[in-house]
Length: 249
Image (cartoon, rainbow, N blue to C red; front, side, top):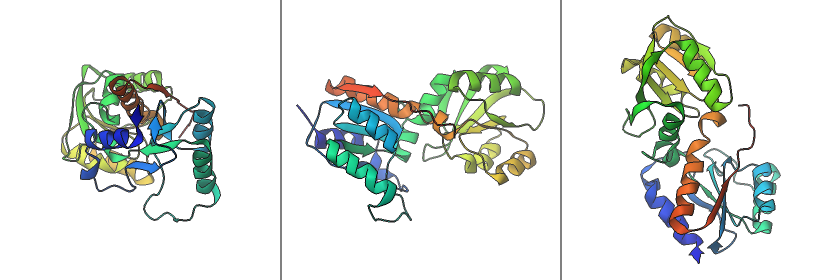
């Protein structure tokens, strides 16, 4: 029998959760039981994901985007109140890992995205493991890279073109990583990829001379939590199912 606290502490250690200054608490966020037999994972702990996990008979939900973000009201009312009430009444505990799941060298979102895009020699550039680089062999045109992103992620990216150079050295940060574009340019990368784009990102790409692709926050962050769930299932001998609920953002 797997105890919830055993799973929680294992994840904390595996992901080095205590070493991150994050925007939310990582680890166990809602405790609704003591044992884990059926784990469901997903990107965001939305009401739809909770209800889907409930229908599957899950007792534990593992997500990348949980609750209790900095600056958020602590009141358990409205949407957050309903979500947590559904978890508690359904006996589903919630584990959430944000930056630790982005940065993990094997199971993290950045590493797993490289696997799905056939990026060679993926490795972190920044010390916190959030900015990564790798090689495309053979080098691709911007159109070819855009087509690969659309095919592998199921979503056509937004591309900010700069010039016609081939893309061999690619940098990326999943999710809301557009703010790292200047660091990517400083490393001399041919292109930079993240999930989101801001108004200023367009100007930065053009002025820095680096191709930019915005491929979707949800689309770029599906793979880490699924990989972590599969790892936990194999390690502890529990059932696991990843639920990819559609999200165009």
